[in-house]
Amino acid sequence: MKPRIPPPIVTLIAAALMWALHRWAPMSVCFTAPWNLLGVLPALAGIATAAAAVRRFRRAQTTTNPLNPSKASHLVTDGVFRFSRNPMYLGLTLFLTGWAIWLGTASPWFIVPLFVIFITVAQIRPEEQALGQIFGEEYADYRRHVSRWIGRAS
Image (cartoon, rainbow, N blue to C red; front, side, top):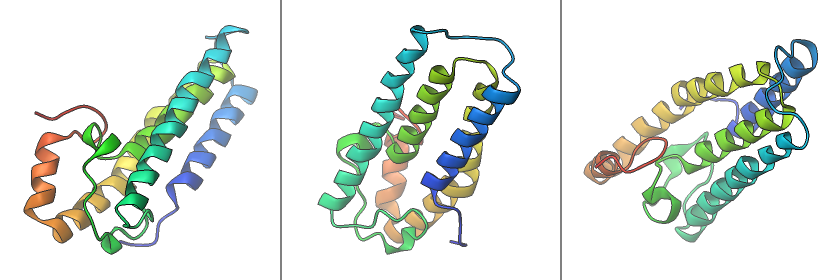
């Protein structure tokens, strides 16, 4: 893979853009206090999901580096990977969703789908290609049974 911006950095950039839109172009208010505090729930769920994915990678003694998937030594398909082929990115998306709720205005919501599109195109697709080359039919079978983002494919 070509050198890329690490996904956690992309997430921080997205969060900063969300804050800037909220601050300087807030549009309408969606969530007011105390309702905006509900944003903590998806944010914590996202952190927990991403952390569970990292634990599964470490247990399998394979790389957690999203910039170099060619170093993967094992295809992890258990734990949170039974429900998402990309639980780390799902977790980051849930975190941004919680942040949008916390901010409370409509304008930050424009960034969440842009984040999903960017991560899919710039990170997930190249990773999928690399994993397909490394793990062949095992990865193809996994792709048939588990969705890219969430849910069982079959």
